[in-house]
Image (cartoon, rainbow, N blue to C red; front, side, top):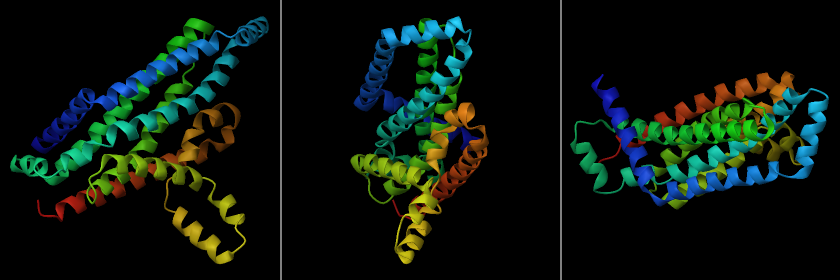
Length: 272
């Protein structure tokens, strides 16, 4: 019980430190700019005409589903980007020389430090997902009279995807303590994992059989993040593909836990 409390105490410190940093301010301004852009788009006459036409056919619910499915992808991308940027400095700061020794002088285990940092950054990403999803729902209710729930699905799937992305960033931070490197690695891993969702098509397009096998082997353990991003669209337009998104979520969480354990082992095996 004491270890659990200490873990959440470390997570709380990560959240408080993030809200004091400039990166969080920049991201919050970006979210505000996104809401302003969405409002300006929904003010266009073509959208008003579409809404009027759909109202005549009493199909506003369908409009909400279509908008929600598209915006779920936007929310997914925004939350993952938010998490990578705001979380990049948490582990390098915690593990920096002098800071980590001071932390370990307290009655805290190394696993507590790593898991607490991990949960704190995931909490920041969850905050972003809830804020963006609620803001979109409020804007669409105000402008169109519909409240789509699928943007919330985009936030949830982004949090699942980010659990794997940040686990890789956290593991890398145990070797090289650099926030810019963490950002670059996070986005690179995200792109490669999204590409892994189309592993079969990519390997089929490679002429050299040996190269195709190597590429397939490299991509095989990566989580299928593109399937997660498309969950909202699958829900509305391709329900037969929802099992793909479900298995992608399970695989992503399993990958995240495995890499997190590696990060704990990496820190525990070092002398600080």
